[in-house]
Every structure is written in C-alpha cells, then in structure tokens.
Amino acid sequence: MIIHQFSSQQELNEAGAGIIAALVQTKPDAVLGLATGSTPIGIYEELVKAYKKGRVSFKSVSTYNLDEYVGLPVDHPESYHSYMNQHLFSHIDAAPERIRIPNGNAADLQEECASYNRELEEVKQVDLQILGLGHNGHIGFNEPADSLQNGTHLVELDHKTREANARFFPSIDDVPTHALTMGVGTILKAKMLLLVVRGADKAEILHRALTGPITTQCPASLLQTHPNLVVLLDAEAGRLFQ
Image (cartoon, rainbow, N blue to C red; front, side):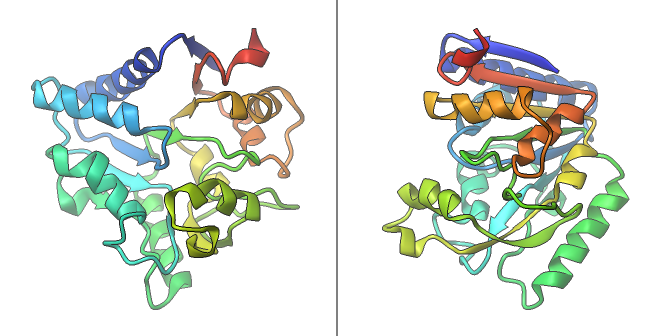
C-alpha cells in the first residue's frame, strides 16, 4: 500500500491524472476501470486537459465502469452514463465501442450482470481501477454485509448511501433504491487500484478501511489484501494518518 497525501486539491488531481496518463502512454490499449461521484471529477478534468494538449490519446483504451443506477434513464442528468459523457468521454477520443457501463434499464438485469461479467472475464485483468470510498466503507456499490458477491450483481442501496447521494437529486425519494455494481472480487483482480478520498467526513472510515480488521462489514477493508494499492488523499481525509 502506498499512500500519498496532498495539501491542495489541484495537486491531488494532477497526481491522479498523471498516473492514469502515464499508463495509457506506455500501454495505449490499456483497460481502465472507471468510477463516478464527486471524487474523480478533478482527475477527469486533468485527463481532458492532457488530451487536448496532445499528451495522451484514448482511442485504443477500453473502459469499464464500476456501477450504474437501476431504472434511471440513460439520459437522466444523474445517470452514470450522463456523468461519464459530461466529465470525460465527450471531451476525449475514446472509441464508443470500447466504452462499457452497466445497463440499469436492461429488461433482464441478471443477464446484464452475467454479460458484464463475461466481458470482464474476456479482458482477463483491468490495468487500473479507480475507486472512491463511501461513508459506510462501500466500494463501487458493494454495501456492508455478512458476505460480499464476487462478480457484477444487483444490489439494494444502503440508506446511508442514498442519503449521501440525495444532494444530487431533488429529494432522497428520487434517489434510486437499486444499482448494478462490479463485485469486490472483480475489483480486486485489477493490476492496480487507485483509491481517491477527499474530505474530513471520510477520515474515520478511511482509517478504518486501511488499518482496521478486514471484514465484509467494511468492504473497503478488503483493499488491504491487494498487492498494488495506491491511495491519494487530501489533508482532511488523511488527518488520522498524521
């Protein structure tokens, strides 16, 4: 585990984008696992800047997103399809046929999960997986539970997760109750995990995840078992590591 703490958000964003851009520069057909939420936005902005300056091309890159809400139209402003287009895909040369996001509106959600798993199995290994951290220790939408699923699956969102995401919707009643998410087993297969955490409100759960017991009640604690985990923190999120 390598932990980097930054005094400014800009430094964190540049570092995260630099790691991803360096991978794509050395391996143009890299497979990236992408995350959504407020945490990676600044990193995506820096990747867009690098692309526009001609420093990196994504035309041969394949991407797989961690998750998507169930029942939210693809063109809804809070769908993760919309998020990715807004913050990254519409600004770079990523090939549409190489972009994959779970379909939360599939007629058969179980088959959609199975199909996503088959595609990831064909890939064999994601080169780099970006991760955020939920207030309850979730990664992707893998919520605390007595046991965790290995592959992509349908999950009922924890009330705390819906509360945290309610700021993006008119009210918590508008936040979807279910999502499709990569499983922890799939996440841990990636060659490199890039965990990005910001804010004082994440300090305690981050410290628990990285130093506490490994337990499915804190899914992020399983990241401790990964051989190549890089953690990028701002000062507030990392205050308990000082």
